[in-house]
Length: 415
Image (tube, rainbow, N blue to C red):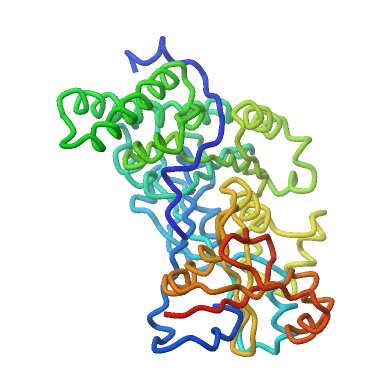
């Protein structure tokens, strides 16, 4: 996936801090025109990374271990037990894949994937190096979205780093540290821009756009608002994207509840606090029980459904978490399906057919001729690609076609 970590903008508000700052494939078959490269030469250019963050002991490493069955993070009741980021690749649940695979009699199924990164907990003062602040802030710059785990359960055996369960306080600590970090970076960059001079007129124009954007972002940050709340032109976004500002990243709050609250999280007052804050901050919200997810990994697959039913829910929180991440980042899925394999591909909403082809391999985009396309529903109703062609629902789309969610595509290209 083309890296989108530094360029995604979603309006949002934080709490004012002016007074606080100083002390603180293709469809199974490549088109008949293909020549001369092997599967090993194919490179996927879209890779989604979601960073799981939170204060110590809120359950983020337990959640990571649960959603990534081969995760190596050591979940323990001790602050900073996850010192280096742990990365795990998780398949994106999608029932459409098996349906397409059965119809195409595919030899294998390849789902889309998402990387979860378990990032060490931080404490108040992280932007000034407290706790593991510097490591935390450097690692979080490398992800596309932030999944902020918020503790919404009481447990006397698991000490809270601040002495009590207080979702609003926890959220404020992390948000303010991200704002402080961005302010420090922006102030240094503005000073450098004032001293430097572009070598040519084009460089001067870009530097001026960067300086103007950073001045407005700085003002927003001083009001406690994140960088993503500032309206920028595409040119300004491009000028500042090299900074990878932390408050540019979209956020999903993950309300971690006890097993007893899974079926009815609305009855939990802590969840309601997070829900109100998410609405205020225009961020995403997912309710999940890390403990339940952990217990699910220990059960055989055929027993998991019954366990979830006994708790009053129909699916685990992983599907909801991934869907929320996809929606927040504006992602879409298209499919390629043939006898060799059925595969899901992740793209950004609004991508054209050549750009979507480029996710499979850059040669597909460069040599794009056309894309034979059929919607998922039409493909299933027809029963096969050949039948879809006979029914007239298989379309030949050109370079300007905007790929839709669930499209099944076969690219024709020449290199």
